[in-house]
Structure formats: C-alpha cells, structure tokens
Length: 417
Image 1: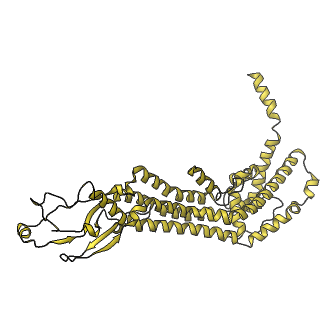
Image 2: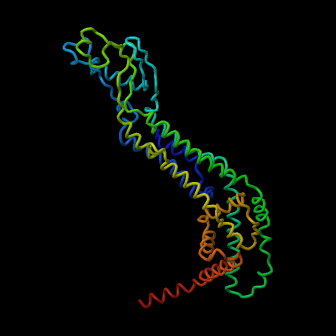
Image 3: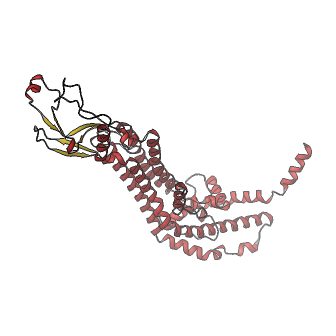
C-alpha cells in the first residue's frame, strides 16, 4: 500500500472543493500554510541532520574507572565495553531519567529528579504541532465552509448578472442613443430576492462570528505551540546535555566516588554504593537551535517565527477588513439595493469574500479592476465614485464593441509588410 497516496486521499476529504468559492481570506490561507509548513520543515531538517536527535544513537555513557580492587589501581573500568556498555546505553535511553542520589555512604538512596522522556519523541511532537495547526482548516472546511460557499455562489451569481446587465445597457447606449425602452425598466425588480437576502445578512453575524472564532482558535494554537516548544525543548533546565542515569539494581557496584588517596585506599574509607552512570546526550544543542527557529529565543524568551505569524495575523486582519471593496462595488451596480453595511455582520464578511473570489468571474474581476483603478481621492463622494466607475466601464464597453475594425487593420498592416 502506498502510504503517501493514502495520506493524500485522506487530506482531500478536508480540503475545499476547487469548484467552490474561497471561504477564507488570502492572509488566513497564507498564515495557516506557514504554521503547518514550519514544523514540517523542522522535522525534515531534523531527519536530514540525523536520527541521533531523537534516538539512542545520540546518547553516550561514561564507563567509570575502577578505583577499588584493581591492581594496579585506576587502570581498569567497571563495565565491559562490548556487551555491558551497549546494554547500558539502551537501558538509559529506555529510562531517560536524571537521577539524584543521597550522600550517605553505602545507604545513599537515588530518586528521579527529572524525567527526560521528551528527548525520544521529537518527531512525534513536531507531527502533533502539524496536526494541531491543520485542525484549523479541518474544522472550518467540514463545518462552516459548505454553507458559506452556497451563499457566496448565489451572491457572486447575482453580482455577475448585474454587471452583465450594466455592460449590456452601456453597449446599447453606444449603438443607439436615448433608448427610452431601457430607461423605463426598473432593475431592482430583477433582484428582489437577492436584495432581501442582502438585508437579512446585514442583520445577522453568525458566519462572521464563526470566522472570528476560527482566527482566535488559530492564535490559541500558535500560543500553545510556542509554549510547548519552549517548555519541552528550549528551557535549559529541562534539556541537560549531561545527566545521571540510574543503573539496574543488579549492576550496582561498590567503589570510591572519585580517585582515592593512598590512605583511603589502604583503609577502605569513603567507599559508596554507586547506583548511577554518567550519560551525555550530544544532539541537545543542535536540537535546541532547530526548536528555537520554531518557537522562542534562548533566555530572552522572545518569540520568533510563530509569534511573528500571530502578530502578522492580527495586523493583516485589521487591514483586510478596514475597507470593504465588495460593498463599494455593489453600491455602483443597478438593481442591487445594498443597505448600509454593518461592521462585523455576515454581509460585511461575505462582501469581503466577494472581493477575494473576483478571479472566479471575468466580469467580477473587470469591475473590481475598474473600480479600484478609477478611485481618486478618499474625500470623493459616493456619487463621484459611481460616475467615474460608470464612465470607465462605458469606455471599456465601447472598446469591446468596436473590435470588428481590428481584422481590417490587421489585414492592412499585413499588406504593407
């Protein structure tokens, strides 16, 4: 079974249908993609740099010198290199505990002072962050996006039809002046149900609130990712390079804790039961650098990329919703009677998405391009903006209706060449 294919098919279930309109803003998609890609990139780098950052390969244990019972002293080790030391490495990796032993001779007790289990789960931790960030898309696409896409499709269709009507009227004006028949028609009669829906959406905010909760959920996940990253993999107190690994009871041995003097060796004073072995986990520093990129700076505890993602999200969202281009467009179209859009209403949210989905329709994209490019000073009145929009659209309509001359011009140029 192709695991990559299975994973790709599984994720398609939670993705947006390509034929549906976009139900989030570009900045949200970008930030979500960054928040998912960043731990995935760190995971790939960790695997590329070697599995010793999350396996027993990065752990080394110190074979203590034998001070007691050797002849001559200090020239031998307590554990056999080829069998016992490899066993102790695996044993220490399985336990991953920093032990602290009492100072009493012979009767000193050892207690676990620190659990280092997170050393072995780095890939799982990064994968957990990826899944948590991906839940932002999963919850939205399986809960709200479908209903929102249906409403958006209707609004986009009505807007596109209104633009067609306007372009058609302008095209007829270019051919026949003072067309009385067109002037008598009331465009609003064609869009009665659409106008009712626009007014209803202006008085509700359930969709907008769900989107706000989506953004708050995203910020919460970023905060959780930063906290967990610092707590487990950056805080120096929880990530020692050297630690004391407890020995199995059947490998405890009696010896001097350090090189004894001649008198201590003759009188056998200061002997202790040794219950730990010194271990070193060298990849801690490399791992910390990678996790710093993901989470926080060293001792200053200042956020880097994930905090930047969070701050960028808040600033971008404020800028994105500061001016509703979709509402401006609908005010300029005949037949669509848009009310005064309430801030943070469903209508405000959907009309912002109307601008986001402008690429779905050439009429929609053309209208937004004309409206934005023809806007002058911000002090212009709505009437002045409307007149500039109509004038610009009329010019483009005239250009399109006079294209039959293009073939004649092209033939003339060919003859001259």
